[in-house]
Image (cartoon, rainbow, N blue to C red):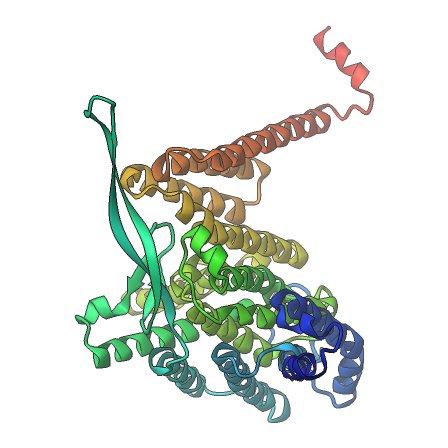
Amino acid sequence: MLYHLFQYLDRSYDLPGAGMFQYISFRSALAVILALLITITFGQGIIRFMQRRQIGEEIRNLGLEGQLQKRGTPTMGGVMILLAVLVPVLLFGRLDNIYIQLMIVSTVWLGLLGFLDDYIKVFRHNKEGLKGRFKIVGQVGLGIIVGTTMCLSQEIVVRDKVVQPVQTVYMNEDGSVLETVHRNVVISSESLKTTQTTIPFIKNNEFDYGWLTGGNTTMTWLLYVLVAIFVVTAVSNGANLTDGLDGLATGVSVPIVAVLGVLAYLSGHIVYADYLNIMYIPDSGELVVFAAALVGALVGFLWYNSFPAQIFMGDTGSLSIGGIIAVFALCIRKELLLPILCGVFFVESLSVMMQVSYFKYTKRRYGEGRRIFLMSPIHHHYQKKGIFETKIVIRFWIVSMLLSLAALVASISVTYCIAEETINLVFFGVALYALLSGLILIVVRTRIFSHMVGFLVIENGVFLFSMAVGVEMPSMIEIAIMLDILISILMLGLFLTKIGARFRIGDPDLLTNVKD
């Protein structure tokens, strides 16, 4: 609203400062500040209102430490998040932008779906909430809307480069050929209505779903709608499963949304998109305003949602956040990046599927169900192992930040640096395996020695990765050297700690007596 108002004032009356509203960065800064102010300023009042109305969480006794103490904590805090997102977007966003319209519809749609689920739990005292099949129907409906809009709207296009091969011949004075260089020169660009998406780690990494259907328009639309349904459903439910500890889903989502905002800005900026050789999507830069508002809302909500939580987001928040992330990724053609970017959501969902499937299989085969984890989702498994709640949450935040950074590198830096003809598939596969194995060791194991081994494995994976995807990648080598330094510090600290615990000597000078 304010964007259009100040545009009018700038054109009609040349109002000083009104032209600032044409800059996405300025409006994004206003959006994140306003979202923070809304959540932090009105959060305490909303919590007191919910306490008076006895809008509290019904806690099932699962035998987890500190679980029953959370009974009665106000829930449906997702309403606060959604309001803190929608108000700045409506004020500072371009409401005539198709991507903003799509994000607003998605936010309201999933917000209502989650609100209905929380309403049944709280006011109808039904702990199961909305039946699973009705949730799926709502998510499928949004997937159809998003997929159809992305395929059929004439405002959603990708700017494709038109290149022409050019041969340059360098010759000696005697007329002999010194060198022949072949390169592609960009001669123009054109807007294409396409279902292209981005494949991580691959240069010239656009993949068109139409290739799978032989170019058939109807079949391509059906395929893309199915992909949109799967992405929305998977990420939305993954975020819902992650919302099980104080501040977990909120803190995990912040770096994910921030990275998506950066990618939206780069994809919507013709200069940066051309320089980084990534897909240019006209008008997608406006999504940065939405991402900024969501980051501000999540950080502000975390003020009250961190341990011990004063309010829970409920399904109103978790279903909406997951769905927003999914739709945002579809808008900027980065849905294939989500398994890396939303790795925590993926692992949480995978742990539930593995647990349920294995339990049913063993019950059918052996007569009694057996479990892979002590409890699923996997954050409850760590609780059962005796790890304190805040430590689990902070470790998951760290993993989410690392995965978000990896997704950003995969989408920009590595794609820009890779020389396609020099990719070594053996090194590439081993490097990915090493990186994931090291990360799993750090996350799953609790001993410091296991963490050191994990860092060593990641460090070797980084070296192999630099060998696999490019000839010259000094930044990757620097990262590996930093990991070496970190491991050295960890080893020194470990040895000093073990020596102190073994001899229990406060004065290091007394260690000289050990040799006598």
